[in-house]
Image 1 (cartoon, rainbow, N blue to C red):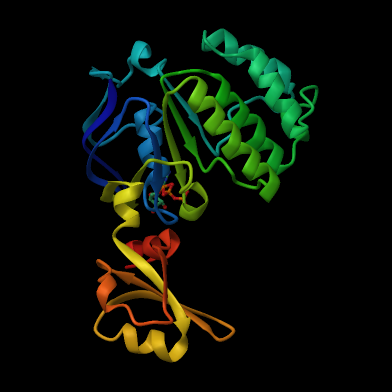
Image 2: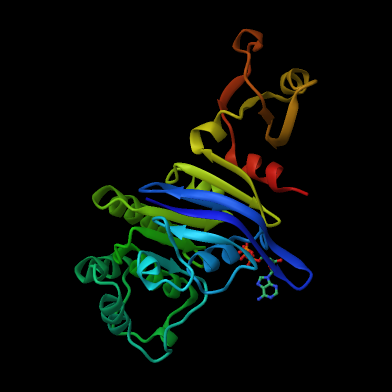
Length: 282
Ligand SMILES: Nc1ncnc2c1ncn2[C@@H]1O[C@H](COP(=O)(O)OP(=O)(O)OP(=O)(O)O)[C@@H](O)[C@H]1O
């Protein structure tokens, strides 16, 4: 059971949005699909769900080619930035309507989540703020109970509390009823506690497909007084530096040699955001 993508390419005139992408999203795993603006995340998710067509390549959902195949597409739900709902429709009616289409939609869970987010389900789509527009779509995505749930920039416009609540509900949902969840975002640090697998896309190509643990062991962070840190990093592969007061931190790629660590320096885990920036820079 998986979503398998084979050699997908997609061009928009002079822009190559996807360049021979092959990847497999396995059953019941949570993926972060990470990439900078314009990397090709939305294009990939839209092709998987048949909203747009690839120039070349194929998508298989549980071994069935997904192209214009309703049986395969019913297994996938995409929460996208685009709003396809009628402006004047009430949220509770959208919930009901989604339930008609996706037989396993859990109305009770959706209403419970709406209460937690303080979303009034009597409101119409048009009356919602940017944040609440994301919230109602997130609630649907977490209630449809399809084997594959794709979330394109789910926390867009959400404040810090609502983002926390979203991640909490995502984990709760996953623990109760596991499914394959793909979260597309450029906020790697924020999703790093939730995701198990990291897929990085850059200019239409997949440049990393690893577990979070593998990424975290790609390097380490060292902190201490500026002079000690400067001395230590000589000859090492440094992907970022931060100075806060008298404390300097360096983000280093490679394996830590513990016996060569001078006194006065502290080691901590790799900073995923720094690693992401380094990976996705030109
Ligand atoms: N309909 C379109 N017409 C022309 N170019 C497009 C179209 N849709 C996407 N593109 C281009 O294709 C590339 C990939 O876009 P895509 O939206 O897939 O990226 P993304 O990773 O989702 O970016 P973002 O994080 O900014 O949403 C970009 O260069 C974008 O400008």
